[in-house]
Image (tube, rainbow, N blue to C red; front, side, top):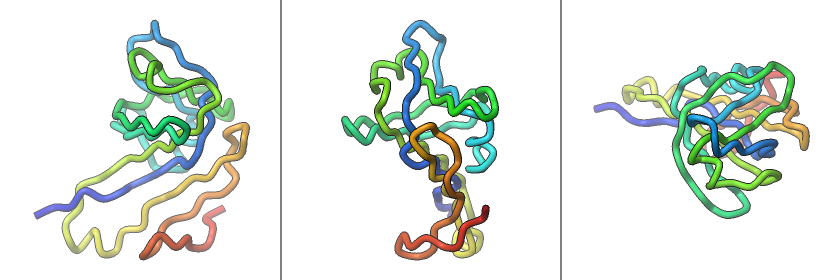
Amino acid sequence: MNYTMLKGKIHRAVVKQADLNYVGSITVDTKLLEAAGILEYEMVQIVDVENGNRFETYTIAGEPGSGMICLNGAAARQVAVGDHVILMCYAQMTPEEAKEHHPKVVFVDDENKIARVTNYEKHGKLTEDFI
C-alpha cells in the first residue's frame, strides 16, 4: 500500500493575475516551483485563503524571479487578484519512504519573492531553513 504525502508547498503566494481566456492551469515563477520541488505540468492543489475555494490544476513555469502567480482558464474564476493562495503538490510513497519524508515548504513575501524555504517535521513544526 502506498500513501499520498505532501511533497512541496508554496505558502500564501499573492495572485498577481487571473486570465479567464487562457487555455488552463496556473503560471508560477520558475524559482518558486524549483524551491518547492514542483515540476512544470505537475498537478497541484490550490487553496484560496480569502474565499476558501480548493481546486486542482497543473503548473506552467513562469519567468524566473517575476513573482508571477496567474490563474488561467476556468481556475481564474476561483480567485481574485490580490488573494493569497497555497499551492500543494503530493507524491505517492511506500510506508518506508513516508516515514522519512520531509516536504519542502516555500514561504514568500508580498511580492512572491522567496522569504524562506524549510520543511515540516512531525505535528507541523518547522525545521531549520534550507536557505
